[in-house]
Length: 539
Ligand SMILES: *[C@@H]1O[C@H](CO)[C@@H](O)[C@H](O)[C@H]1NC(C)=O
Ligand SMILES: *[C@@H]1O[C@H](CO)[C@@H](O)[C@H](O)[C@H]1NC(C)=O
Image (cartoon, rainbow, N blue to C red; front, top):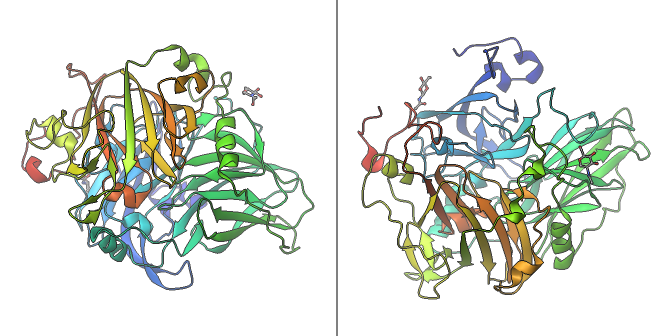
């Protein structure tokens, strides 16, 4: 069914491999993505980058809600490779999640076709490589799930839709970064900040007097970034697939792995304005700029740059001000707020505390004193084929135990539809960001110090935003409510990639004893097999 179609010309090189087939229900989109090394020089020094179809960042993946995607990823690197679709809830389909607990990595010169349907998740996402330290070299790109024409959006028609992929960047080769981590050394301070792959000078085009949508995602490795546009306000309308109360901000703190959708009105005297991304919660501040360019003008940029907030309180207050719009639609016919998350009492509570212990003399990162190691056999395959000894459910403590840290393969058993409360307790002096695959969760509270049993009194049980990645401030906690309504094997991890790589992650296995396609899809025929699942029969 693959071929070259006519819609290509308007989209450029990549999309020449897209064919939109007018199938009975939802259209299919076929793409072929070839992953290669290539020389890039975002900080002025040539270095080895990871390209997708020759591009850095990778191609923008624009889809319409409920499209059927068929993305054949061909790995031409010399290392195993996987992509994940950050925040896309693979409904009943953890087979396509693209992390080492769900998928065998695509071997060099191998390929794997991701087949999935982003359902009811209109919003801003990005994809990125999950294996080794590939994310430090590229392989990421923006992903937008657009509404269908018949679905109303809580904002007027737009004159432009832009992706702003911001992130810290290193001149060091990804394999050398990985070697340092393997030796037990922490990731150093980054060398710079990139906006859409450029340290300076990326363009955002604006039509005078009109409103455009800017989709900001922090695709970096470890640093929170503040995003702002000189002389312009940012009206927040969407966070990771949820429509928000439309607050207006001068700038937004974007933590690693998070995505925000803002409206910007080009209502200033026509000229060029600075777009700024600068580091937060760091001793030294790195700043990078891009250009907000009013069309049909040639009046150049002028200083000063808009200032960034400097304190933590500002960021916490902003986080608390971000709320769900209960009356607007999401991609569903019902209003977002029709599930009254705050009226349901969680049946289980987990306290997940991060730490940076030494294990066998080397720096690792851990959750409740367990530092995750990936078995050669993906957990999902071990589960499906009943391969014993890959993981067990009984070793991960649901609260920090305070003992010595150890290595382990943490999997938490959960029943389908369990409603849980998770407290992320951060007793380190650095900011954290946590991401959970497969779900959106309500960020009900944040506070300084230790979470206590009466901390729930400060929770927002009415209109907390539902999202997939949350920050946890230094020496603070963040509480979330989560409905385990998606059967499968799901990764919960630090979005800060060195931390994830060195063990700050675990899996939730959401299960019901009944095997039915209504609950979870069966193993896809093209599943790659590895480890002890090699040679198993897929029926
Ligand atoms: C690899 O690509 C071929 C088409 O070129 C496809 O038929 C095959 O299913 C792909 N392999 C996997 C594991 O998806
Ligand atoms: C919530 O969404 C509704 C419907 O789209 C919109 O009319 C309203 O202005 C929004 N409320 C706020 C406070 O942003």
